[in-house]
Amino acid sequence: MNDPEKAALERTAQAGIAALQAGDGKAARRAFETIVASGRATLQIWLWLAQACDMLDDRAAVLAHVARVVELDPANPYALVMAGEVQTRSGNDRAAIAWYERALNAAQGRQLPPDLIARLNRAAATREAAFARFEAEMMGALGDAGVDPANAGPRFGEALQIVSGRSQPYLQQPTSFYYPRLPQIPFYDPADFAWTAALAAALPAIRAEAEAVMAHGAGIAPYVEADPDRPNKGHALLADARWSAFHLFRNGLPIADHAARCPATMAALAQAPLPRIAGTAPMALFSILAPHTNIPPHNGMLNTRLICHLPLIVPDGCRLRVGAETRDVRAGEVLLFDDSIEHEAWNDSDAPRAILLFEVWRPELTEAERQALTVMFETVAAYTPDQA
Image (cartoon, rainbow, N blue to C red; front, side, top):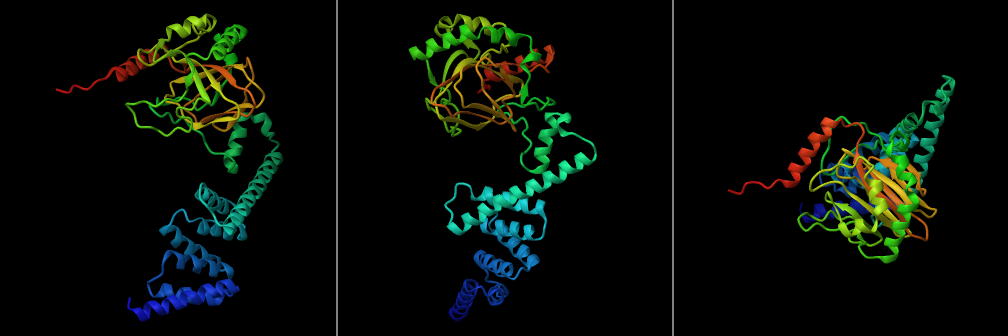
């Protein structure tokens, strides 16, 4: 581009900006369309052209120009929220929600100007109103059909949350190994497992041992520790004592001096179906979470196990989310869950929370599968490639 052409286009752009600021959508549109016709339009020119068309309520043009901006910058929050606003004006709630979701996600963790913050706040409120309209429509249809959603159970309730856009499907996503064709169940009912009653009955003795461990302090270490042989995954609580552990079994072996300090706990663990896999399992520990600490969302390594929590020392304000379901944590109430599904935990109290945490085989696995998986996992743990 020679200097006169560049200067002319810059003057045209300045005129378009001035027209936008003055609320003159027609003049702004003419200016930015002139630049587009020159073949010299930048992403910002396309965005300003979309804004000019938005000022004129030319919705088709806005969406076309937004598409060009998003092609160049998929996470441009101005373009994304503008498209959502157009769809809202057109009465297309589902399309609007999709654009708003992208805009809100794109804006996370970014420094934003006040005008964009205000638009995103409106987008979040508009999205909530759209959810409410859809839910009202759905509940009305169910009522007209004589269907009580409560009678359909929690699985249908979760489906309603997904179809309304308030939740997402949470599936097994283990970080190390996926075993196929297992059911996607976040929480299991402890009453379905014969060994959980004896575990809960041993609560006083186990809690006393945990209290002694916490009072003494020896052997307690951060739950998340770096592995020198593996890349750092950047866990938010890496080497952080706010989430600590006192291991009873680790890498398939008992910690002798720890086990000796906790005979009642070891006796209770002996009654549970712990995996026995050389170099790998069982795993059992006291998990200690400091006051006002959140264990952020994460997924476990395997979907061939369940994690058992026996809450021991639990102040008010402790919760566990697995997938879309959040439960209060209460002392003595066993929790069994699939940790390959995204989960997180909170201690919002002013005191530490302590639980007994260990793994058990999934009940759906046959004895033959457990034997085969044991060989598989032991082979993986022991594998050293031939360097010859």
